[in-house]
Amino acid sequence: MNYNILNYLIGEGFKNVLKNKKSTFASLIIMFVTMITVGLGIAIAQNITSIIEQFEQGVPITLYVEDGLESSELQDIEEYIKSIDSVNNVTFTSKPEALKLAKEKLSDSAEVLKQYTENNHPFKVSYAITLTDIKKSAEVVDILNNAEILNGKISEIKSSDIIINGLSSVDKGINIACIGLGILLISVSIVIISNTIKLTVHARRREISIMKYVGATNNFIRAPFVVEGIVIGIIAIAISILSLGGIYHLIYNVGNSALMTNFNFKMLQFNEVFQSIIIVYLILGIGIGVLGSILSMKKYLKV
Image (cartoon, rainbow, N blue to C red; front, side, top):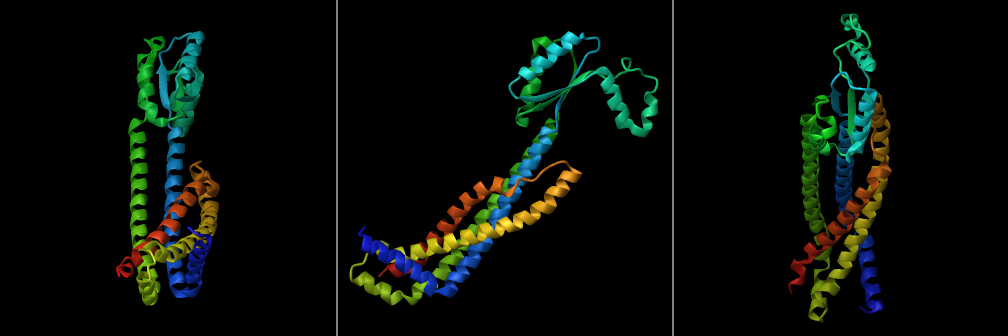
């Protein structure tokens, strides 16, 4: 395309943005509301996923071994567990430590354990095993059950597969709900922006008809309106990112403090969710603007 023609089309697009202040403002408001809602949805979904992952990492597989094993055998068992691919960390609890933990859990009722000594009580030596990927829990349990080195030495293996599966289902449900809400908002925005830009196109319908009669192509006529949609989209992206950053900062200051104090979980910082949000914003801002412009012109290009 000739440079002068390209310069003209882009210039006309920018002029349309400034000339049609009411329709530009209406489009910006609609896109801003959509983007803020979608951005908060993404941030909330990612934080919930992060919190679930933090919770899951604190839900270990607990392997109890039979009494009477030598310290060298216990060391071999620990080294074997650590050699399993999906294992992140192994915490060993000795016989005396098991009794101490039981007393701490019973608190005021710890008197019932007075009769026991450090090495003479019913509580087993155990290994608390955390994983790099909690979804591998069933696989790791299966490996432990079938390990030759553990044959005859395992008393019990406890895992929290039901809790893990439940949390995974909650995470999937939240993500599906956010995607559904996003699609609904995007659809509504495209329709409203199309109708808003249509007012601008309607005001220039005679000019468009004349251009068609003198041989202008549909793409040539459509280009300024597409540029207008892109410019509006980019402005909406900038305003939305700045606003969302401020809103998220306020939520983070209150929410992260409460989560750390009460549950020892932490929220994601804005820079950790920014990449996902900016990618979606670029697609939304430019996509909605361009699609809205194209749809609004269909009727007026049929001359």
